[in-house]
Image 1 (cartoon, rainbow, N blue to C red):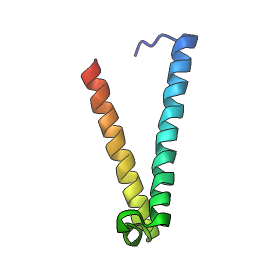
Image 2: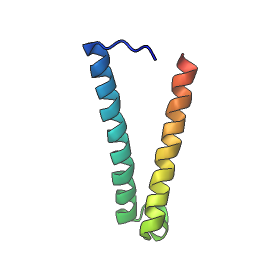
Image 3: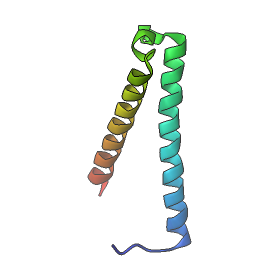
Image 4: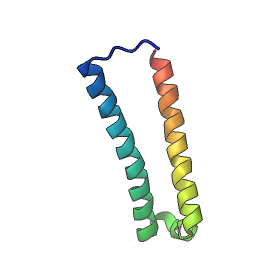
Length: 75
């Protein structure tokens, strides 16, 4: 795998990783907010800890798959 080890690519990679972490945290905080405020009556579904994490990781998985498809279609 030939990657250009430049400072520009390092900053780009670091920014992408920080962005990915922000998306994951936003999903968890968003689901917590939905659970706390009972938005759309979803508190009964998200009240169980196992269901909360299952929904959160499914959303993270769907988001990552969408990102991969978007990146492949751009190149």
